[in-house]
Image (cartoon, rainbow, N blue to C red; front, top):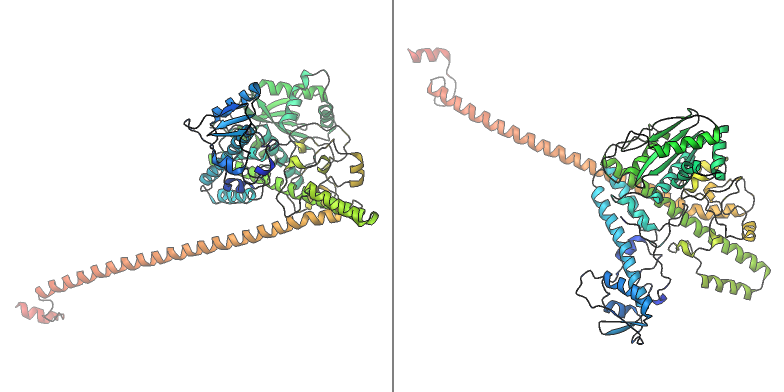
Length: 578
């Protein structure tokens, strides 16, 4: 499945968003139900002609729906010719439309690609959801998340600004890119924190792994790589786990074990250690610790297709951390289950981050208004409210706002760290800050999601007034001073508590329904068995009755019974014979 760039309405007239184009804040399920104008694939449609004449009609939803767009090939010709001829209009189907219609058609084609990717994902889940009860439960949970996630958002809770559409690759038989491997590495790292196994273990993403492996090619090590080597030498880091790309088309897993002084490589297609990866890791370890490490194979499942190497690499890392809890992948069904599980977890983190950002922004607006109300007159307060209306402050009940619309100062900021942050798609794997030391940080009943996102553009004044508000509530220490923690956590916990209550109630209801269905099936089986037994007994009785009647007739003919069917005494039988 080719990667799809995020959709932008930058060059689209605002009056077309809603009637003609689906709003970016619309859910993915809403996008699939939206009445999107069809895009032709046949070649027997009108060919658009570029012109320098003035347009005869404005761009409205009614006009655009009445005129059939050109084919993809014709549209590409328009995009190329537009730059050369400096046209002002496009003539098609007897109408002369403004030249901006080319951007409208190009965006429409882009939206169709996004919707087609999610339609393919739903078809894929519909077929795989029938394999087992576990598959069905995961697919139902993903469907619930798709009804809440905005289709035009970027994936939040992870580094990078990849569109939500990229998540559709999980529900396909497509090769997983570094974006997905970085997301899954973050999930593993978060799970380490939740299980209390984070001490001395570091999960690195694909980009960080490439920097480590290519370290021997540089004259001086990257500061983050040098610090990691120092931590490895001094014992602060005992195990480094990650994934690496070889030959630009195959994912493998690796582990640098400081206690065993060995490097382990896991490859789902081969038992031969890749020279580029082993040489790079051995050179980095030698350069950082001056120790001679050995090499060995890493436990990994055997791949039988051409696209699941990423899942096998991630699975081998999970198996290394929890061998009893996570078995190695061994079948197509288990690979499908792993893909669905990863997608469900990524969507959970994304939705929880959307809630957190909305609550944080709402809190900032409330506190700013309160401070302004204490210091200014009512007219100034009304100006603030008018400013909010102009900016469109998202409320908790509103649809999630696109991440592109968030101000830089609204994004979470990274906690203070003693060393340089390394740019990677996997924020959790390269964070150098110490894990939360307070018990409340790990015992919080929340999704293991959001590591703070760096934002160098945020102003120092905003950060000084915000304090530690850039840290998500479930990753913050309860010992922080100030009133913001309480109210922010209050806003954040309300939807989470409601969501948990709904999930528990839905799970309880589902278990009751399954139990009732199971009891009904057992009752039907018992009735069927009883009917079958009665039928068999009836047939046996009929056969026995016929057998008795036949034997009785034979005894009457032999004189053993009289004409009434009564048995004749033996003495009488002897007299009758004589």
